[in-house]
Amino acid sequence: MLSICHCGTQPLTTQHLSLRPFAPTDAQDLFHNLTCDVQAAETLGWEAHTSLDQTTEMLREWHNSYKDNRFYIWAVILSASDTCIGLVQLHEIQEEKGCCELGFWIGRAYRRQGYAAEAAQAVLDFAFAKIGFPEVCALHFAGNLGAESVLRKLGMKRCGLLTSHVLTADGRVKDCVLYSLRCSVK
Image 1 (cartoon, rainbow, N blue to C red):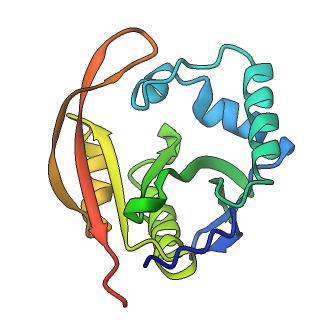
Image 2: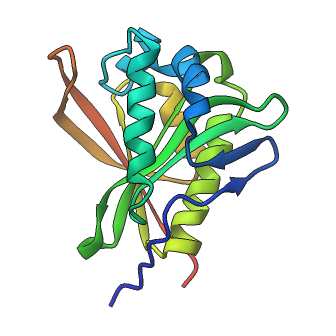
């Protein structure tokens, strides 16, 4: 029997980052660094936000969801400047299979500096050690070499290609690459 113990989004700290639940005060940074960026939104299949109000509303919805101990979305805060540079999440939780999906999104100005891997590693460790998931999966759009590099740094193994897996906000159908990692600590 699986021993999964949901505990909600807990604060985590790494060498360069603080990971914590989003606060309303993160809206400006999140909008500027992520949600208004059309190219960045395309990597997730989202529509870019055209106003700060859209990002503020999204954060309001997330804030209400933090009451659920199965809701896991962290703001990625650069400790040196106290700037929100991205997010990491655990979603697509499948209790019966004992797995969830890891997702991450770092603003373009902060990519290629190791922050995505650093934040994702902290959440991966949390998923295994604190929640008790025996397996964590991740997907990225085929051709997203940055995401592929991060997942490989995390030790995740490529499991396959899911053809025509996602319908994006703009109506395109995209293939996704599936990665997985099983917990090595019993």
